[in-house]
Image 1 (tube, rainbow, N blue to C red):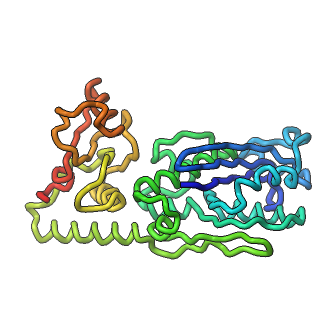
Image 2: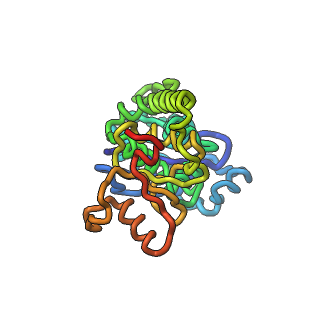
Image 3: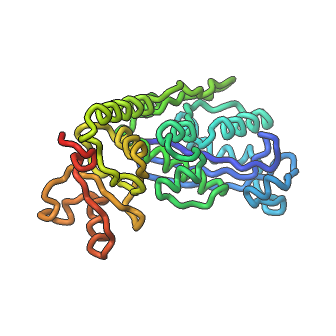
Length: 312
């Protein structure tokens, strides 16, 4: 999977006042390059609110290059690539307005928004803010530092792609209900949301079917052991997608975690005869869970049948 994540911080309320930019370049699903630049705004006016958010002051950018010089250094990582940002409408507006200010022709690239993706893919989270989503994913970073934010944005897309099992951005966009926008010389097409995502629709239908079945057959109601539990999934399930399983966890009072940690209470897997497996044959999540169990952490390892509380 190849794309570039971008994040701007601005000096004031104008979208043409970037004072820093972070670029995270992903090649074949791995971070290949990271770039960070302080930028001297053409209008050297910083407002206190913006300084409070990102901590950049006029004296820090006094000797920095202006945007036109910085853009020539980041253009190769934008031109012709997929560009992603968290709240892309803001970052794309900063880019376009500043290019206009310097009368620089627009490059050509497609773009999409990880905030909209996250809002649809993780509907059970309190909000889709960059720090909220990455805290859920177990990824720590320094919020409102442009490069750290760009890398955190990249992490969200990489995790969603992993959970969907595809690196095709068209498929990811369709599954998460986001639009793919385009910037091109002379104009742009906004990345408008496509409405309800396929993930959300599948999750809603699955949950409704499960609840309906349980109502008709109360003896098949799963016990309350999911309530209050922090649950990790490893490997594919037979009866549902990863997104559907996450929705099921949320519907029954549990919290989905993307990685095994000291907070984990349960691990769901279809692997059999775990006690006979060699560590090198286990998934990373299963191996870490087994290691934590050996150190005394009470992690339950459940089959899909146990997870659903009914035979498959």
